[in-house]
Amino acid sequence: MNFDEFLLSISKIKNIPLPAETSQFKMAPPFRKELLEKHKDAVKYAKKAGVLALFYPDKNQETNFVLILRKTYKGVHSAQVSFPGGKLEATDTSLEDAALRETFEEVGVPISDIKVVTPLTEVYIPPSNFYVQPFLGVLDKKPSFKKEESEVEDIIEIPLKHFFSEDVTVLEKVATSYSVDVEVPAYFLNGHIVWGATAMILSEVKDLLKQLM
Image 1 (spheres, helix red, strand yellow):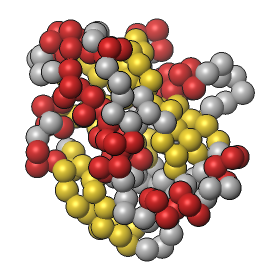
Image 2: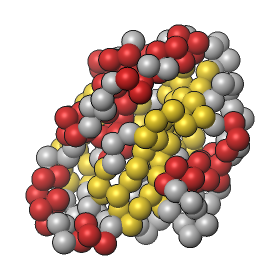
Image 3: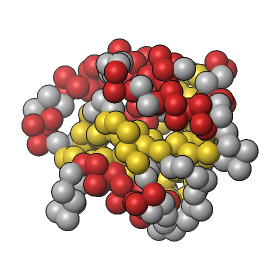
């Protein structure tokens, strides 16, 4: 989609309700309800994080968004695809600030260049006990990405038209943090499998944008 048309479409975003969990659960792992029940006490002490679904024009003025591939490390989200973003720090005044700060740190996009359009629906992540607040944001020009070498393995640029293709939704067997391989709904984007909370957020983004276009 042409980026000017995209901007015109999302200017109406405040006028419609978020699809919320109706969309998110389309891409939720099959064990999610059981995990939510298992972690119902831990939820009270969940940490907070902000992430950013960032849209921008490519060199042909077509709409793209960015994801990152995290480094392999000893943690539950090792080598997974996610949005830029991270946990709320003491220096952050809000989850939106945390999302913007982490986006700058991870992919090098200046905070002043980003316009946050709307918050999306919060997602709880049981394995790491985080509540993640996503935001939808835009840039008016193609950014010069610079990855944070210690945390980011790769920066993944996704054309919106590719994301809207029906064949990007797949079922994939993944190794979970609970040492069990499970078949989960996922997106296959630019050669990467995107599942879990990131796929759930993307599902809401997709349904929301389809209502606007």
